[in-house]
Image (tube, rainbow, N blue to C red; front, side):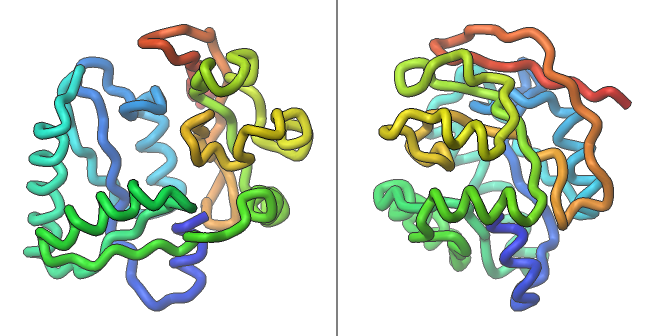
Length: 206
């Protein structure tokens, strides 16, 4: 949604998508999404993909070093801003602002402060389609892993769970929407509990 709003304003040119990937599993760190699905997503969005390979487990100092190297590389290529999809966690925003300032880049938060219930409904109304790929069972029933992010899901979420998962209750993989050239054909595979999180393994039907 942050990308959608950025593209709609046409105030910034988006030159790449940046994501951390575990080099041990070739999956998006934390989300558990396969690297090949990430590549299909970037291809459908028609935006270059920048992978930041990190070890598993990854100490925070290593993560910060890897991110600094990649962002410094893009700064040398003329990039001036970094876009984030954060919604309301002040500590996370401060952390990003502090780290980005060290590289002399400007952070942008297109959906910051938006009501998350309304935002979830807006995303669905625009035609974005997503699947829950990771659940923190300490915050949400593990059975939600693999479910479609739709109106019935939002109705079924407990009142204490943010409808956009901003508190880390769940993570999603977006496979279609108005900024995609075509939907990414996915299917939900096995569900696996790893490192205290429930993952739904998504694969491509292509």
